[in-house]
Length: 304
Image (cartoon, rainbow, N blue to C red; front, side, top):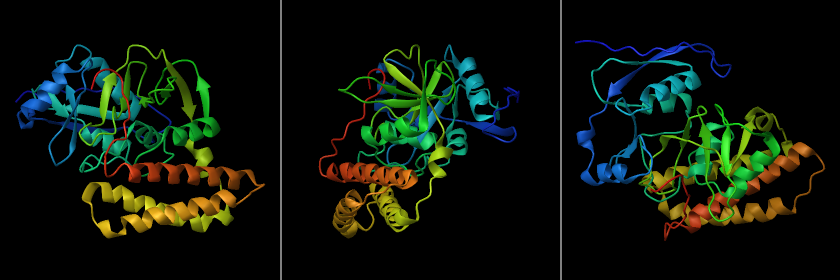
């Protein structure tokens, strides 16, 4: 068998050393006809698929006209030596995503519409560490307090559209490609997609370390409780376990929200942590309230 090795030597301050990762061949015959048809109907190559009731599959297609540039940009962004050792057309990118964004699991998909673009962006930037639903207000909180406006698209830059009607955000891996989740639909996978213009988007460079350096002993107990409830709902949308606890968790969130809103802090760190907790509560309540109807919508680029 002939071997094809694609190697791009790069250095990024975000990663200590270059590691080797081999892309496994992906057999598209596993896809249903509807999945393949939907991909062809998209305005952009999605490079991602949903296998029913199993996992999200993110694909590298070596036949695409921009495939060489994509793999080169991905290698530079991840600081990985990416190899393909098959004479094949398509390869599975899931190991790359899960290594670079460890908070994003592709092995299970939610039953309810939930994970959305803003949550994905906050995960890739390191502000959050659980897959969930995030409101526009939650991501705007982090952009306002821990990010700086920039004017050019580049690796790890966040984009959020300026529209007040439809909100969408992404993380760029280069000037030419982005990583996002186009909708909050359980049938809408994470994806890499080319971007030809950042017009209509506000661009930010973020530093999550500034957020995680905040300390406030007065909010610590509530932080731990909110994190526990956050974990419950993150798991619940996937496996529907402990359904009988759902209502009580929601009521507890509402009580914590009331208590937090009454607390006044002169310390800046405490004030920022308080606001971040209120935004997380609001996002969780929004996700919960949509469970019966599954009608939260997160927009995307192009037609999906």
